[in-house]
Length: 217
Image 1 (cartoon, rainbow, N blue to C red):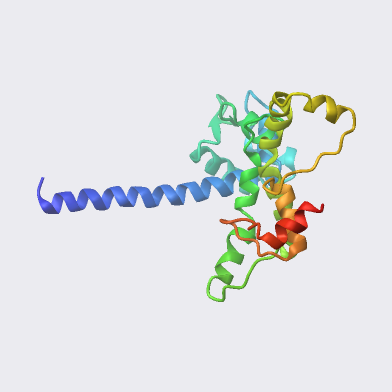
Image 2: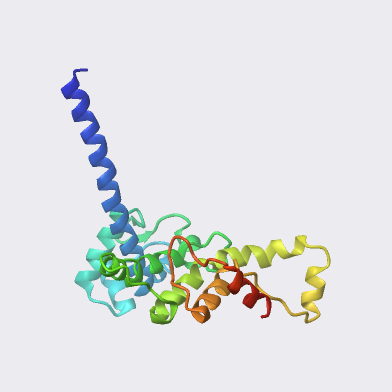
């Protein structure tokens, strides 16, 4: 292989990586829209498949745009083609996206990733460095963040607590329980009251002052 051929192969490989990023963005927003408007749930009610017009009628959405969504979801491997030309959910997506009691549920991620706080707001604040506070984000963002931690608590409450000798009995007897500062809901609550900036990557920093205050809760 010549130097020019090697360079061309490297460029093609890098282009493939970039196109994968675009496809991932499209897939993320497609799933988020499908969950928000009940499309994925409606398709899941028809394991044999459902036609576009029927899906539009069942969800009360525009047939043309439902067709566009279905084709995009098919391209993102969220939907599969049914034998009669309709669509059905890809295997196990009803569990992964719709069953929030499933320990491996990931349906909550897609709504959060589509929120303005992680897209528009970040870009708007990039030049100025203005901080994003918990009391300025939308209820949808807070609810979405809580949803992303649900699988952890499902596993913790389902099996984790049972591994601590005597803990289940004490909790069933009405003993008070306090989340640690590392737990997502506790961290969000502490941040909202201490006016600590919401930093998507670093989270909440336990300074000595905040730690002493937290110990008094």
